[in-house]
Each structure stands twice: as C-alpha cells, then as structure tokens.
Amino acid sequence: MNIDGMISVEEARRRILAVIERLPAEEKDLADTLGQVLAEDVASPVTIPPLDNTSMDGYAVRAADTAGASEASPVMLRVIGEVAAGYIFDGEVEPGAAVRIMTGAPIPRGADAIVPFEETDETPGRNFGSFAKGRSSVGVLKAAEPGANVRSAGEDVLEGSDVMRAGTELGAAQIGVLSSLGNRTVRVYRRPVVAIISTGDELLELGQSQAPGKIYDSNSYSIAALVQEAGGVPLRLGISHDTVADLTAKIQDALKTCDLLITTAGVSRGDYDVVKDVLLREGEVDFWTVRMRPGKPLAFGSFVAPDGRRVPHIGLPGNPVSSMVTFELFGRAAIYKQSGRQGWERPTLRVVVEDRIVNSDGRRFLARGIVRQEEGRYVASLTGPQGSGILTSMALANALVVCPEDVPSLEPGDEAEAMMLGPVR
Ligand code: AMP
Ligand code: MG
Image (cartoon, rainbow, N blue to C red; front, side):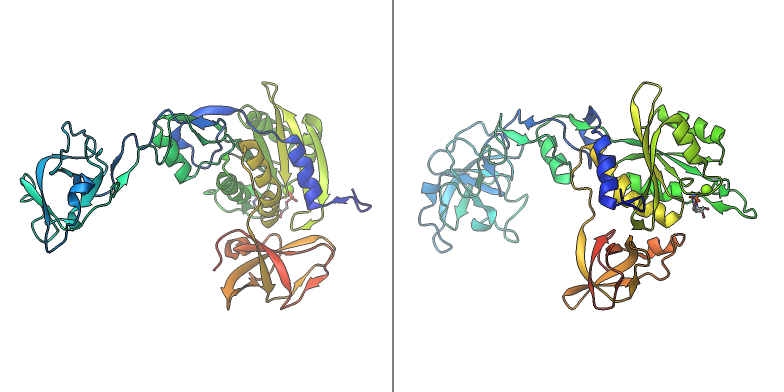
C-alpha cells in the first residue's frame, strides 16, 4: 500500500491469485475438452502404428528382387494378391512375388519394401484403376531399398510409454493424440462457472424499451464473452438494482452454482454504490484503488456458498471500458488459475507510438490502440477519445498500449509495450 492508498496492478493480482485455487478434476468426454488442462499423466495402452505398414499405395516386394530394375529393363514380379488398410494379408511374399497394397495396410510377411505405383508399370494415366486390379504380374521400374516406404510399428507411440503429462493444455493436436490411444474420456481440471451480476438502477436488459436516464447493460455481455474466451463458463444473472435486498438475493443465488463471482459497478464512492454495503455485510471483502487507468476502483473478496465452499468475488468497476480492462488484468488470471492453465498474459509487442499518450495522474495508463506492422516494425495509433465510458474504443482496438506509472507521456516516435488483444492489423 502506498501513502495515497493505491496498490499496483501487480500487487492487486498477487493478492487475488494468492487466494484463488485450482478447481478439482473431472472425467470428461475427450471431444469436449478443448482448452482444458490435463489432470493426469497419460500412458499409452496401445502401440501406434500397431504393425509395420505402408506409407504409399503400391506393391509390397522383397527389395532384393528389385535389384537392377529400370525403365529400360523392368523386373517382372508375380502378383499374388491384394491388401487394403484394415486387413491382414494371410499369405507370404516369396521370392519373385508381390502383393498389391494400399496406404496404411500392414506389410505382408516376407516383404521388406514398398514400390509405389509410380515406380511400376501401373502408373496413373497408363493402366491404373480397374484394369490394374486383378492383374497377374507387375513390372518394377526402379530398384527399392529395404524398408522403402515402410512405417515402423511404434514410430509414433509405444505401448506403456508416457504420452502426455498432467498440466498439458489440450489443443487440437493434444486431443488428436489422446484420441489415437482409444480412450473416450480423460481427466481434466474443471472449467470455472463464473456468475456475472451487473448492478445499477440505470440499467436496462437488452430488448427493453428505452427510458429517460436509462442505458442498456453492456458489461454483463462483454464480461461473459471475456470469461468464455478465458475458458470459463459464464452464467449471466442479469441486473441487480442498487438495493441491498436485491443484490443480496442475486449473490445468494449465484453462490449455489458458481466458482467465481463477478459483479460490475457500485464499487466507487457514489451514494448508491450498494455493492460495497452488501459485500461488507455478506462476505469478506477488500476495496482497492489500483494504480491504473481505466479501472481504479476494484473490490476483491469471497463469500461462503451454501455448501461451505469459499467463492472468490471480483467487483469490477462499472464503466464499460474499465470493466473490460480490469477483467483483462485480474479476471482472466483468476480463471486461468482455477482452470489449471498457465500463461494467462496476453502476448505483448514492442511498438512505436504514433499518437501522444498523456498520463495525467501517475497511474498505469492502458490506452486503446490499433497496432499494425509497417516497414518491419510495429506501429500503434490510438482509437480516438480514451474515456472509460467509450466502449466503442475497445471494439476498435486490437491492443492496450501501456504508458507506465512513472512516465508522464509517450510522444510520437517513442517505444512502448502493447498488450495484444487481437491479431496485428
Ligand atoms: P458505478 O461504478 O456504479 O458508479 O458506474 C460507473 C459508470 O458505469 C456509470 O456511468 C454507469 O452507468 C456505468 N455502468 C455501470 N454498469 C454498467 C453496465 N452494466 N453497462 C453499461 N454501463 C454501466
Ligand atoms: Mg452505479
């Protein structure tokens, strides 16, 4: 804490993450685990591929038989049968014999190389297709090395080997690998259910008629989307009036099912900022002013759920930009920790600023910027006016350009760090 009562962004995050715990693991259908984190070490019950097999369509041969083969003097082999992927050829390739074979089919006994169709007289455009099927001999046009076009059993995975460690985040490739082992389900850390309550008498639900002095609730939508993007399951519980009774009821309802509670607004110094009163009565809550702009007021604490779980609560500020930016810095980290995910940070880029960014009051300023690539460097312009109520600035931005606490201004041409919210334009 500082003399002015403000804490740094890092201190606020440290305090939040010190309390938040990873959720328990659950057994889940593999198809449903994208973005979740493996909660068990996985060893393989199978060898992949299970048998030596061919990587090409062609003929399974004894390599020695093909010695000296060329276009000018093909080696003629007797075709004794055919095998497709998924079947075993139950004969043996004796000297002078060949088996017509399709990609993925196990190598027949006796054979040690595959001659692709392209290196036989059965080439596309020549006599490929139905005519080739059932023919009794094939001309090999090129000598094959032993092992040519053969994929060895176990070249990918060996039975009993460790395939993946607990803590691995499951992307498409990891899900692919786990499915290749044949198990339908896998143990992953649970996704947090994040209850979101907007507070404010001025708020209208979408679809309600406009009314004097009222605005539509955008926070619960933007925050729900950010929650989902971070891997949480958003549970929008609508709007609470600025009354202790209404907010208390909504919070009690949320606590039945949620792992994290997010409220927006009502945490600053206004007369109707009842979130403060409710939080103090019902939970254990700290109110912080964080040395950042947008987003100075922030509440953090916890409530006890009916089943005894302690549910953390983050009270985001009400201004729509502040709400999103504070979620970026605190909410996202909390959801990652609950999910067992690493690296909640957005990627950053060093950029050259094009517009002046003024830091009026010694807080970390996160300006909404548009980062593009130009002549081998990254350049950031501002989206326009930077008020914390101007939500369209977030919609235009692909980055938050950071002006540090101790830097009074960034001038055009200065370098800065940009937290990337989306791809470079
Ligand atoms: P407060 O923190 O309650 O003083 O709110 C700060 C500002 O954010 C006020 O202008 C509110 O009208 C606005 N605000 C609060 N909640 C929302 C919301 N859910 N959607 C859009 N604006 C909001
Ligand atoms: Mg309010």
